[in-house]
Amino acid sequence: MEAVAEPRRVQTLVDAGISRLPSRYIQPLELRPDPRRCGIDVGGIPVIDLSLSAGDPVPAIACASRDWGAFQVVNHGVSSRLLEEMKSVGSSFFSSPMEAKLRFACDPRSPASEGYGSRMLSNDDGVLDWRDYFDHHTLPVSRRNPSRWPDFPTNYRDTILEYSDGIKKLAQTLLHMISQSVGLPPSYIEDAVGEVYQNITVSYYPPCPQPELALGLQSHSDMGAITLLIQDDVPGLEVLKDDEWAVVHPLSGAIVVILSDQTEVITNGQYKSAVHRAIVNDHRPRLSVAAFYDPSKTRKIYPAPQLVTKNSPRKYREVLYGDYVSSWYSKGPEGKRNIDALLI
Ligand code: OGA
Ligand code: NI
Image (cartoon, rainbow, N blue to C red; front, side, top):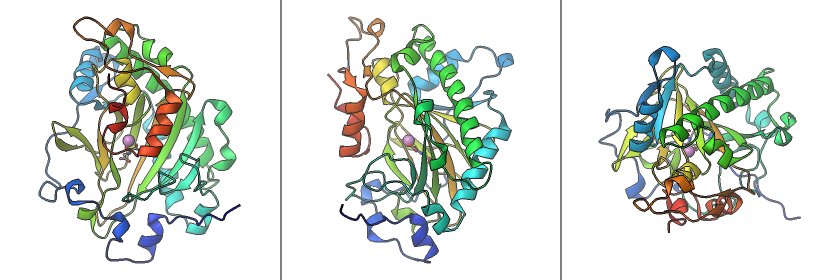
């Protein structure tokens, strides 16, 4: 078997003390974050209170889903103790010595393999993201193999397990509300997705010597049904709205909800998946934890027949989710070109 060189982690470059960005990480001019707008508040995505006393959240979810494809939720029922513990074990892993981290390296030959990595695509000859990550396969339970997850700090594996279960429940509650908000039965999207495939990705964005030239994560929409993300107190996540990048302000205890491509297909385009990206800075590392709620690869996804009418004709072709994923990994994530290929 041909030996495959272990690809670099961004952390290695930072530890080596580089002061200029290596060319592989320099974004073309038109994709760089706009330095004039850096740090300017253009208003954030909506924040929705899910506590019973706040009243019915469905109308607010309808608005936010239609206008932004993303929102934050508070009083969502996942304890802040668990959110903090999840970020804390992630952060301990990334601040551990490289040697210890590489014991859990992902397989550089196969895309989306579990473990510690940096490059998303195996045949990646484009511009690289200024990001390292750890990807965990957490659901269905048959995909779970905690021995592939870090064993330090000692509560790492238990925290992932608890987080996986807690966030799955919240994702299902949100999918119920999203279904209701377009007039579908509450369990419609959950049933259309079938057995959930959940991946949890901890992303670590080290300080970048020339942040105005780089992106932590290039512009994309997520490929599954819904993504729930938590972040530390360092801003960096941005959502595209009316051709402007809006900062997703870190809000203690909040969870960011991002509608993904299959929800766009199932709602026949009533809701669009949110195009988002992560920018970096030169003084503080940033950590986020994304939980992806995806269909199985054998699932066929298509617009809900109830939402296809004379006035709103069918917009997307049926797709086998596994084919969608393969195409995503061969074309790369840029913008929305993957879902655009399904347009009728
Ligand atoms: C992702 C993602 C954003 C972030 O992992 O798909 O969009 O802030 N992450 O890390
Ligand atoms: Ni994303």
